[in-house]
Image (tube, rainbow, N blue to C red; front, top):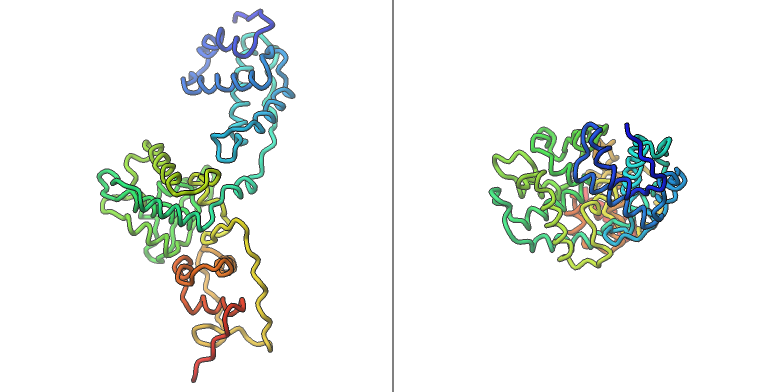
Length: 367
């Protein structure tokens, strides 16, 4: 194999003069889109680190480049900077070019890809969480969307409103939700949805989710005959870019501030429970008043001892639902909205208000 003798080669010069010849020896060939990403990585490296000769690029230089690239302002991202996955992708492109330089004889051995520090996902997700008031503004903007989804006959406003409600209640990814079919909805036990692990991600386990009343109503509203998928977006997944573009227009038309205009991930930012609304500043619920005398826990319906609740699969935990309802009461939400959002009865809501001391204890029923 002919060797390149110029010792002062930079990344850009080597990839321009010898990249095509070295890539032709590889199987499978590198796609044009990936080659374009390689040039983007080269320009970023030389802009931040200078046009260093290939021989001077060491693992410590790559690690320093990763730190500088991760902290560089990036206005196109909702967080204002590049994600850890994007930084790792750019570093991988630079490492690939260095491997080609090793095969060409420019360097003795290509440096290994450095281990980069990853940003905590909990902090990143906390910034991108929509509050329930913001979701209501988004739903109002969805209702104003115009047009019909191709041959399905579904109005665009109804489709996006149903999709937002479903993602908000189930915390699924939009790609997973778009791949769900009606045969996954449990008919024997209404309210449950079986999600195969292959739709969630590689190596993921199957999930069984409890659908709240708003989520069930959302998918029933857009159900059409001869349409096996829950959300029949035309030509999915080939036309997924158009879906994201239409949703971006809806977000911008919702009136949300510029720094609060996120994507679909903001609907699943809080994954603690399927029915837990996201709050910017969670309000601590006051402790319930202590009973005058200890006694057995009474049931709301019968007044007798509360029986042991039956197991309901992998639905949301009762304690987390109560905590979510308490937060809604502390924020001053309307009772009818709370009843509809959490699919509970008025008497159950009244009992929780009594525990919080927000209303008087109901009188015992006459026998």
